Image (cartoon, rainbow, N blue to C red):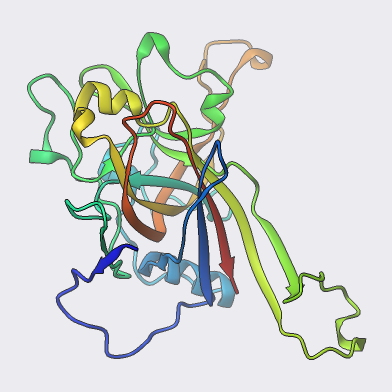
Amino acid sequence: MHNIVDKSPVQDLVDIKEAGVKKTRIIMRDHDTGEILGQFENKILVPGSQSTACKQFGIEPIVNFPTYNTELKLQNSKPPYPQTQPYNTPITCLWCAGRSGAGNSVNEVFVVSNTDRISPAMVGNAPDINGNEIYTDIIPFRYVSADLDLDDDLRRVYFGRKVLENQKIAYFFKAFDTDPQLHIRYLDGTEVTDEMYSIDSSQLVETYVEMRLSVTRKDFRDYFDEVLGWDNADISTISLLTAWYDDTIAENPDAEDDDKVYYRWYQDVIPFSKFNFGREQLVDLNRAIDFNYQVYY
């Protein structure tokens, strides 16, 4: 069992329910064996609560939180809202990972406050003498040389692209492995239909969205190898992210129209939720982890 340590200076006196979200359930598994590594809940963060409330009641946000685009100086980022109006509805569609969720002890896990996030800050606020950008928390999923950049298929999985001073390319965000699926079912697993009101049943109904996230054998390893070192090859927190996308920027603008390549460039990326867990060591190059997320309404 993990020893949960509350690092917040003030204890909450009131149990505040998350806007629109009743609870979450995260099942963490070894990708290869299917072994369950733990079942957890995550915390909906303040930007996520505002986003949910605004969508539910059709109102405008009253706080413009800092975006990862601005703070990480991501490529092809537009001025944040409200200077740029979204081209499409912002949704929860990406995730990122970091190392701030646990202490030095493997079992020392920090309690998440709804004002937390995975920090985008750089150590010393500048690259080191070799041009490496070392971050206090967030870790890029992929860290590649320009001549070994991700192919078209992978560019549709990894996002948050940044060309660094040392000419390496970092990708800070990743798409979900599966499309979010909505489930409405009785507690015995029977799916609810439009005949619900004519069915005589005392069973409660649960409504939740489910998706899967994964850490593959390729994720993070190049950054550990070339920047952080293998003594720091671990993760202990992940965060779901809300964003909208711009897919109007041609990668090869001088090409003929039929030959132009377009990728999605996510904008106004902000945290929706955060989940801390005991440090998962990724020194083993074969280690892969799945996260099955269920968000209940």
